[in-house]
Image 1 (cartoon, rainbow, N blue to C red):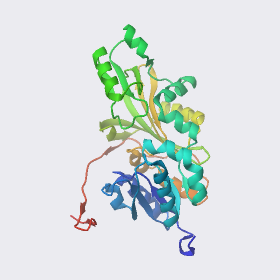
Image 2 (image 1 turned 60 degrees about the vertical axis):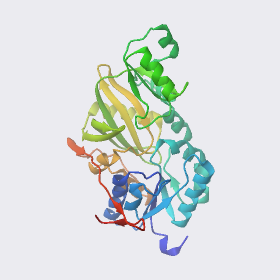
Image 3 (image 1 turned 135 degrees about the vertical axis):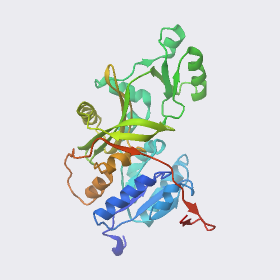
Image 4 (image 1 turned 90 degrees about the vertical axis):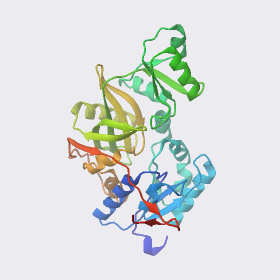
Length: 335
């Protein structure tokens, strides 16, 4: 490694897309801690907005090009002395978990990813459902195709892809006809059907150190969403949710930033899904004081973290769109 860069902590954010807030949170934590280092953002599209807020931008192959994608990550890590690789979307998680040893063996970077068995639990909704049931957590009941055929169900129901994210192809179904239409749209056998839940929906941002010790658990109410991602949210200190999610995390043994979706219903706290990555709304909890970006920098500096519950509560975040302009040379220019 270049002597000039040996004290730097450089972060690679994958599938940067629209994650401008997350890039800026990493930059703010770096500057606040007076750490030398760069934020490298990578995406398959050179028009991903977050690229132009990073210190370095890189274009990579699509995740579906498994070997090419992994090799490009290795190349980027070596060229930029990357210390930590941060995934941000569901579709890259299995690949990174499966190829972590290869990536870490050929670079000095750590991949921020939970163990493969944890990723398999979280990425397949049926696996998630079974794991939650086996560990005593409330989930909406799963409905089989046989139940649908027999008519022994009560509508509305909820249908979604087994490996879906961002609420894409997730539907409330009011009838057998609608279920059949949505099954065909999602694809044969690639869906999960559940009882429909009603209640107050929460996202819980959690951070665990690299040994799986819980550092922060922050619930926020999902006031409004757009395309499956939170648009308006309020940070709350809900002791019951914090306690239940703490038990879940203790059983799951994940690492890094974890985003959990649940709902408070008449039955209690029912879980929707577990996303072992930074969710789109994670900057809300970060800016409320549960700073996962700062936590990661501190871990990379060799510091030991302890559980913290000093985040701000009853604060509301309203997210909005903004634009950047690229000039004739595809470089950002002030508007």
